Structures are given as structure tokens and as C-alpha cells.
Image (cartoon, rainbow, N blue to C red; front, side, top):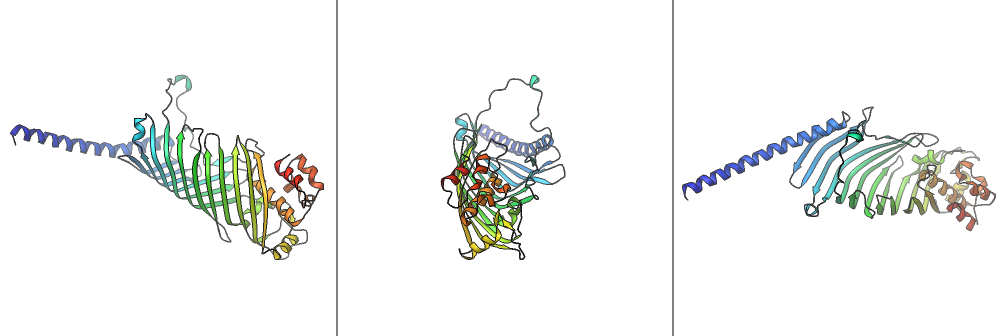
Length: 378
């Protein structure tokens, strides 16, 4: 090997070593710079343990957002974003997958139905005044092949219920959604969801599978709920003449369809294993139905009350509450099963509009078309 060739090879090796070391140092400090920049922009309530920039993907560890009281309202154990380099040839940002491990979300609704947790820190999204901003080109689209959530948790605190706040916990949440684009496109994204719902009497399971248009919120989803502890839902249906439920479970199947913000969801529910506290008076009611009739029916029907119903409503109507409407529909369907007159159900349960009030003179049993009209709001 000639002397000049040896010198050339030595220089090349030296450059590779220097450049490789420089890239490693830049990546190391880039991670810290990005981390500091994010924390600076999001404020003291936001924190990140570590950001790792690697070839083809970014990994973020220990993301947390606290509210003004210091409570963690968002937490992510690990977030990994993998790039799809083929998308670069199409002049768009393409992400093959986003994986979120061990996330936690605390959602709180106040007595007016407004979300008070989580909220972004003040100043997020606020830049220079519009008058000083230079014209910006539209951002290139971003496509995500798959979004995956593993072992997630959600605490949902509802203060809008009439009696007292209700805390619903979702655990072991696994979620997969495919074909997501930003800006959101007018196309469906399929998804699958499963979760557990712990309660005092046992743990329920939730499964959902379907597709959704994120842009318009149109959806077509099948939902299955099994073994839900109904004692946790008492504030939703104990509005008048409450009876104390010691034990009970709910199975629920819904086919949810939303088009142009109009919801239609036919479903079936099974109330199982209902047990009331001893000493329940003759006037005590369960979901608007005399408890004595419920107990008698359970004794002669394998300890279960199966019912069918339909939920319909306009999601743009601020007075439409899916949770309350669901309980109301189940209450009316339960009354139908037991042959109770609608007029015997408390007004809080049967208040479904002017037409529904006129129908209260009829009995639920045998209503047929009239009951269907009530469900459809005709």
C-alpha cells in the first residue's frame, strides 16, 4: 500500500471518528435541548424525564402534566414514535407507528358539564399577535399508520350527577387505531378497544370495535359491557324514592352509529343479581320501578331482567346527555318488562319531551308503536 493511500485512509478514518463522535454529542445535547425547550414552553406543571433521538424513531420517557393543585392529570410511562421514510418520498410526514405505554388520564367534569381537568397550562398555543405573524405555508400532512395504547388508565370524575359525584375507573386499557391523518381527513379509521372497570362487587369488562371519522365524529361501533358493578352507578338513577342497592350487575350491548352528529344506538341490557338492603319500604323504587316488583320478577326469571331499548339524539344539543338518556331508556324498558304504567315512573325518569308526557297516560306494557315513537322522539 502506497504512502499516499495510507495517509488518505487515516484521514478518512479520523473524519469518520470525529463525525461519529460529533453526531453522538449533538444527539445527546439535542435531547437535552428539546427537553428543556418543551418544559420551558409548557411551564413548571409539565415535565419529561428523558428524550432519546434514535435512527428512525424518537422515544420519550416519564411525561407528566400537573394541574394547579399539583395533581398529575396526564402521565405517560413511555412514548415511542417511529418514522416511515417512504413517506418522505411522497413529500409528507409519515409515521409508521405511535406507541404509548402506561398512560394515565384524569378527567373531571364540573356541575355544569364542563371539563375542568385536564387543561393545558396558560399560554400554550399562544404565539405572537396575528398582526405580527408572517404568512405561513400550509403544513404538510402527517399520516400515522398505527396508534397503540398499552396498559392505560383513566379516572373519570363526574360532578354533574344530581346526587353526588361519581368516580369511574378504567384500567388495563388497550387501544389500537389505524390510518390516522392530520389534518383530519374525511375517512374512517378502524379501532379496537378493551378495558376493565373495577368495582366494589367485582370487575367489569369493556370491549369496543368499529371505525370513526375523527374529522366529523361519525362512527359505527359495537360495544360490549359485561359484569359492571351497578352500585357504582346509583347516583345516575336514584333521583326520586331511592332504594339502597346492596349488589347488582349490568351487561350491555350497543350498536352505536353517528352520522352528521345524529346518534342512533339500539341496544340490549341485562340487570343481574340485584339485591336490596333489608327493610326496603313498599314505596321504594329502583330506576323508577317499585322494588317489590323487581324482586318478584327476579325470583321467577333466573335472577335477571333482560331489556331492549334505543338511544337517539343530537350530539350538538347541549341538553342531550348520553349517560342520563341511557339510564332513562333502561328504566323505561325495565318498566315495560314488568308491566308498570309510565305514569307510575317518576317524572325525573320519564321526562323525555312534550310528546313523551302525553304518552304517560298509557301503560308501557303493550305500547308497541307508541313506545317506539317515544324512543324516537316523534
